[in-house]
Image (cartoon, rainbow, N blue to C red):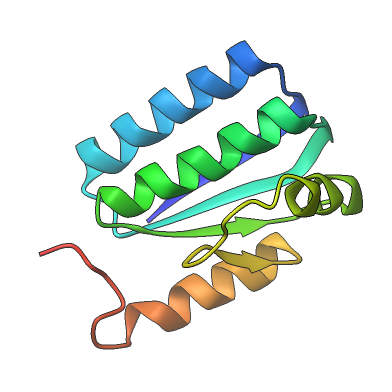
Length: 115
């Protein structure tokens, strides 16, 4: 399991760096579950929100489940405005609930798509 807490203002360049590091981490650690906590992100425009969704899709393509926690109302609104496809992406309001979800998923058959 990987936990990726994001803090501060996210620019497009920083979002791309986070995605690259995230995917390398999933692959290198053979993670079956990733929690991305965005509670500490102070600002996230459309480009950054789009990058977050692309990161989530990429993690799923690597065979891991992703849980995004701490989405602020402004980020939620941007996701809706972008009509972002969030199918298969689990969201939880807090990091605590995201960790609880991840721990409960560990015991479920088929919770991990990694062979």
